[in-house]
Length: 350
Image 1 (spheres, rainbow, N blue to C red):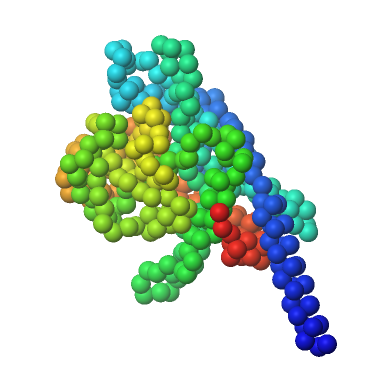
Image 2: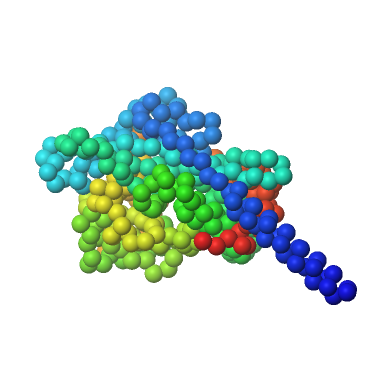
């Protein structure tokens, strides 16, 4: 009789755990909000202020900053999309700021938690008078990533003689990202999976190959993954490095699926023109350098032979806000939902 009672208790406990996990899985829901990024854009109160576009949209020069950046994007797009475009003005890139919040329904009620913010490109073809869907993922940023890199990683390495990474670093962020991208919310709004285009790492070396893609340009190889590469791999993303025509340095393209087959040429051009513009503004030492990357290339933020754009960008503020927003994520997301998130993460599977 005693054995039967124990078995029944274990079965009940297992059922309770399963019910809890099902509830958690079902109650992680996502909401999207779209805001037009144009010269009249003002960052909303819930916007992550570390994003490049929010940085440009503050201060006395905000409107001129935005106009200059948007003109750079459009000029670069038309330069790359030059076929049947003799005047270089056929296309206009329209940018949407996509803000993603996640809701957790627990015993304390439903909580809307800021999660991710990205830019999505849309292309207007003046010749055909048609709108063409672009690609999401540009200027990718997230609160949990801020926490991981600007709070957790720094705290973990305090008083250590050499840099090291905590066990399971990036696991939660990666699973939350996968959960969002596989959700019906994402699939209802986007036709293609994201491409997240970032700067190459300043402490890695890149070697140019003979392969040249008609849009992405020359491919570079890098044989030792950076911490960012490993972090993004937990999001289910692979990375390839390309230097587009008339660029001066390669960029890292993080993607799932097939980068060369899953996207249209105009979609790829929209990502290149958008992200190269922001990199020229944010990292001119690399992406607005006055010399082109060679066959073997190591980028450096200490490079002095570069030009400045006509856009004011506060890099110091960006670094400070990354820490502040990482602490915000810790206070409002990581700490209060620690047990729920750990349980969900341990059992998450697509």
